[in-house]
Length: 115
Image 1 (tube, rainbow, N blue to C red):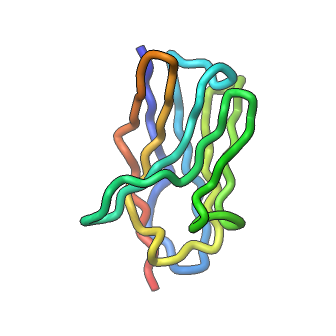
Image 2 (spheres, rainbow, N blue to C red; image 1 turned 30 degrees about the vertical axis):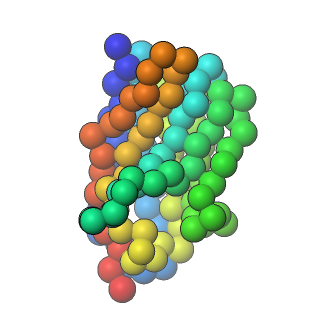
């Protein structure tokens, strides 16, 4: 059974940084697509970035150059380093895993960026 648990969210001033973590179990990173999504109040959930099993990445234009996805295959932890944060980055951030059979979500972690 796949479980995803996010941590690392919080309140930060504009221009600051946060690192989110997603501890995963029941899934092998190198064989599946892992990613981060976010949902702001009143808006649809949107893709932030995903990483394929082979390590290729795709970032949303809004975060390119500021956010970096990485993973620790040995520890089964997915990271999202967020720099130069903006108020419009405020959202609940979700870890996502896509296998050939299913899509899994974490419970989300709140990121709030104050101006």
